[in-house]
Length: 262
Length: 303
Ligand SMILES: Nc1ncnc2c1ncn2[C@@H]1O[C@H](COP(=O)(O)OP(=O)(O)O)[C@@H](O)[C@H]1O
Ligand SMILES: [Mg+2]
Ligand SMILES: [Zn+2]
Image (tube, rainbow over all chains, first blue to last red; front, side, top):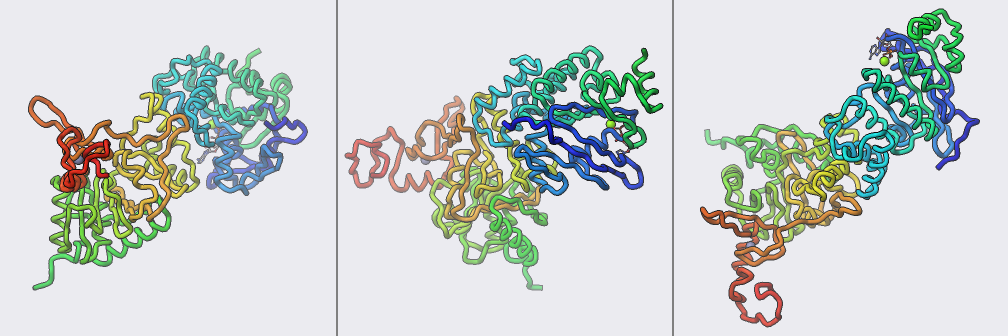
């Protein structure tokens, strides 16, 4: 294992900009993320949150700007200068990506054990018993009963599917996880349980995370820092508690007052 | 008009050249699926039009052709394809593996070891081994390009999770030349080891899916597995009840209306050749032509 380096950022975004044709997706986003830090990205629908997340996780190429990542060996890599195999390897080992819709992040026709084991097999695990033991351990950590290991997620509830998606992503002990509205579409009580679990695991594993959410309560519960987006731009950023308790921008004040009534 | 109604081996020379180019590319990149412009053939897709087009493109007037279907030379499918090439190419045909220079096969590899002088042409229904778990073609192509084969082991994992062992018995995935993962077509996994280091050229044709792939002679072919669930070339634990062979792949056939069954070689030529040499059922009286069954070993095995 690498020793955590808290002095050098894990990820550096510089001037990230994305146009879909003439439509602006996201403009000039710059920030640094440190190991173990959880950053929330908030803003109303269409403000550019998902675009920013996809730019950071190299799922779409920026119109301009760069993303630099500190690899496990300590070297800094410009993600768009990396070869595609190297980038994809990073995505399935040192990173995780949790989709709002678990069907996009899971193989629905594959058992829970196979879903969790896939990343291990992708990096060369070839011992069935070991893979199964690790998958069993991870199901326990996301509170899925062991006797559901051979069931496919088709038979799972929405909350279980989302927890399975988290286990599938975390099994390779990534240092960074991206989440796009991880609690969206779930019942309120199911959301609360998932948030508790996410907060606990992220803290235990000291994983850095970038969480997109339109729900300020989610941001408050999970994140240390927050970025507020509007019309494709980051209009306010800072420590989550400070920004939410004392918002400077009128737009942020509006967001806070409408969603978090005093 | 006295011109023949069709060209030698049915396909026109331009089409054959196109298919040969695909074959050469396939040989140059062992296990890689080369797209080709598959033609309509005067038979349904299920009859192995991919294999037929490959055979038509490599066949010369001096070749001797054998066609097998699940090990047998005399099913409707095998007979029709043999007739087709007799009629369109006037080539010699045979049922004896050792006499053939080109062998087109569906679902089996002959038991008789192949030689450098021979080409084995497989009929392939579904060439993409990853399709079962990843239906998107753009994604499977990228997986091949980047050697991302974790998914193939997920399939085997699922097998073990469900059945306690790797239950895949046919079309068992292999890795060719330490690079491309390949579907060997629906042969029994018993045949997989024969693909490894084989002296004959092996060509695979998928007509409906428009793909050709190849294993050049003497290429390393490894069946995928887990350390604690190693690949096993399964066969029924029995001897052929016609020729006594205990090393061949067996079919279980129903012999009468009472549902009585017997095990016989799936490769009918292999079985016939053995019987012609005097081998008989394991429990029958020794049929050794020299009468020298003094070794204490199976009386039907050659010394
Ligand atoms: N694939 C796309 N093609 C064209 N426009 C897009 C595409 N994706 C997003 N947009 C536009 O970019 C802007 C930001 O969208 P998005 O990043 O999805 O916002 P959010 O996730 O905050 O709802 C919106 O105006 C949206 O319509
Ligand atoms: Mg979004
Ligand atoms: Zn036999």
